[in-house]
Each structure stands twice: as structure tokens, then as C-alpha cells.
Amino acid sequence: MKSIDDLFKPLVAYHNVGHPADWDMQFDRKAPLDVEIGFGMGEFLVRSAKNSPERNIIGFEQIWERVVKTLKRIRREAGLLENIRILRMDVRVSLERLFGQRSIDNVYCLFPCPWPKKGHIKHRLFSTEFLKLVNSRLKAKGNLKIVTDFYPYYEWVLEQSKETGFKVTENTVQPQYDTKFERKWMEAGQEEFYEINMHKVRHVDVPVRKDVKLRSYKVKKFDPANFHFEDQIGKCSVVFKDIIFDEKKQKGIISLIVSELEMVQHFWVSVIKRDDGWRICKTEGQNIFPTEGIATALELVYQAAKSST
Ligand SMILES: C[S@@+](CC[C@H](N)C(=O)[O-])C[C@H]1O[C@@H](n2cnc3c(N)ncnc32)[C@H](O)[C@@H]1O
Image (tube, rainbow, N blue to C red; front, side, top):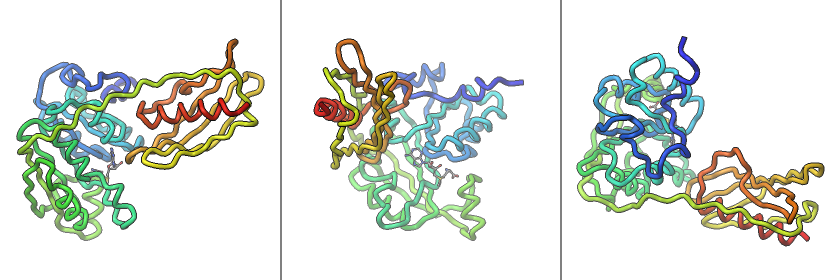
């Protein structure tokens, strides 16, 4: 019987690789690198790895249940462990921080979330800004392929693609990927989909974004009953949710929501009694991306703690 460790072997953790990561080293070989964004149940991802054993393939997916289903699919296909890696995280963060410029050969995205409501268009993935990021991570002549079921999304992506360094070609295509969402739309009666190919013709420079070093703070006194956090709303928002204080342990945990760009993170800050005062730091054990917003949240907790007495 295969062990549970085998199941999770293709999973790459944000904090366990360099920024940017050396992907040849992660795969233990030098090979062309393709990525799939939002692989869902992993049908296309696993098929691609199977059909192209000479290529390294990385999949991005945010939803844990879908990642686990895909990991099980990979395990069923024994030798595949060699050429698939999985990143369970927001592709915007991982492309920006874990991939060097000119490091990827091809990017695929099948049936991206369409966000059909007008007020939700800001959540769509392939904005001009994201297309520039994809461009910078692709090698010269690299290709991005997007297939969508939703005509307004197709039109929107074409609009967004201006000035992003791509030559764009479009097509309508027959169902051919046999993914959960392709099957869903076929069952609903859709017979063709909209395919956009973006060929990189000019490089757009988007440097690798570095993690922010998170510091800890110290205050002489701290009064949890008198702790008032002023929410910060703006380009980077930090919103207070709760404070839990353990009298016995003289330890508090402050829960915050940090949103910056499209990224929203739940963040916990600890305030712990020490001999010489109170230490304010990131609560251990949470998996957050160390961004400017997280650093700001820590600083704001420090300011609020200072004013609590
Ligand atoms: C409509 S589903 C399509 C799934 C699959 N490609 C298919 O054809 O069945 C879109 C997928 O993209 C994933 N996704 C959306 N935004 C993402 C992001 N920023 N980073 C990683 N995955 C994302 C979602 O979790 C979802 O599983």
C-alpha cells in the first residue's frame, strides 16, 4: 500500500522553496516547463503530464478539496510523480514571487472563473496587470492559452490584452479537454467554446516580488480591556475582527483581515507577556504570505497596543 506521504509528494509549499524557486532543482532535472492555472479536478493536468513525460508541469489551484482529488488522481498514475508539482495557492502571488522572469514555456487556463456580474468583474483573473505578469514569466515565444465558455469574458480578455507584449489569435473550438467544467457546459447544451492564444512577442519587465521581513515589536504595558484597533481602509485595508485574551497565560491573539490588491488574508497577531514587557509578533503556525499589508497590520497592532494604557 502506498503511504500518505506519497499522496502529498507533488505538493510544493510556499515557504519550502526559494523566491524565486529553482524549478529544475525541484524536479531534479532540466526540462521545458508548462503551468496550468486553476486545474480543478486535475484531468487536463494529469493527462498533459502523462502525454508529455519530457516536460515538467506545475499546476495552481486554490481550492483544497480539488487539490486533494488531483493528488489522488496523480497517485493512481504511478510514474507521474516525476513531472508534476502542485502549488495550492493564489496564482497571482506564486507567479509573482516563486517564478523568475522568462522561466515558463507555456501557460494554460481552461474555463477561468467568469465572474459574470458587473460588480464582480474586478475579480477576473486575466486583467492587463496579470497578463503583464504572465508575459514576464514566459520565455521568449512562450504561449498563454485561455479557453472560456463565456463570450463576455472572451471579449473582456481581448480588451485587457492590449499593450501586454502578446500577439493574440482567437478561435472557437469544439469540446476536447474533458474537464469537469467543460462537461458541465456541454451538458447545458454548449457546443463550442472560445479559445484565446497569446504568443509572447515582446518582453514586459515585472521583477520577482520579494517577501517583506516581518518584525516583532515590544511595548512596556498592555491592557487588553482597553485595546482599540482603528481599521485602516484603502489600497491596503486592515480590519479588526476579534481579540481573545488568556488571563492565566497573559497572552492575547488578535484576529485581523488584511486585503491588498486582490489578495485577502486572515492574520493573527500574538501579544505575549515577557519579563521586560509585552512582545507583539505574528502568531506561530499560520501560513500567510509576508506582504506589505501583513507588515502594516503588525505595525497597527503595535500602535494600538501602545495606546491601550
Ligand atoms: C471554473 S473552474 C475550472 C476548473 C478546471 N480548469 C476545469 O476546466 O474543470 C476555475 C478554477 O480556477 C481556480 N482559481 C480561480 N482563481 C484562482 C487563482 N487566483 N489561483 C489559483 N486558482 C484559481 C478555482 O479554484 C477553480 O477551481
